[in-house]
Length: 264
Image (cartoon, rainbow, N blue to C red):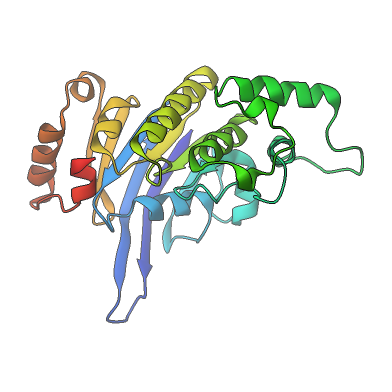
């Protein structure tokens, strides 16, 4: 479903601030893979997702999505293939619009727009049904402005919006990092269910090592813009945080420098 072929990205090239964000990185995701991504600060996690989204064009390498080379496509043209949930609950939704209006926009992503009435009665009932599955009481608040929702409610809504069209690839960029532990657990529960029910190919960046181990069928760790660990199957099922830290040290020759990831 996704191939990253020898992706390289250097910021501030030729200056004292030069930073190799991605170093000849290659990665393949099969259809239905749920891959968690862990790494220290500046390891290249978000840079890798931005390469997939087309936020910027790599210095070299290719991005292949479901057999289509999207390397030269701008961000807005790649959007129809992707679903994305950001770390900031304020992103991914329009705060000044109603819940049902946000959902309507998500349903129409990548489609041609017309001047016909925006939301039909049958469509509204479908939204109500899908919101009820979140178990957050949002099904009775279709006309509420999204800006009045809590952070957890907004992230759950954004997750639903990102998966309504069953994207080729779902990108989760530390989407629980700004939430309290109880709310984060609820959002992860919703994430797991939506990914499983829709068989979505998913790439989830997380700052939480336990989440990286617990969720998904595969775990990769980035360091200095390259993948140094790729763990799946029985090896992942038996993995613990101390094991993972030990493996990182052996693979990188360095110590994992991210207290937030270790302590979460």
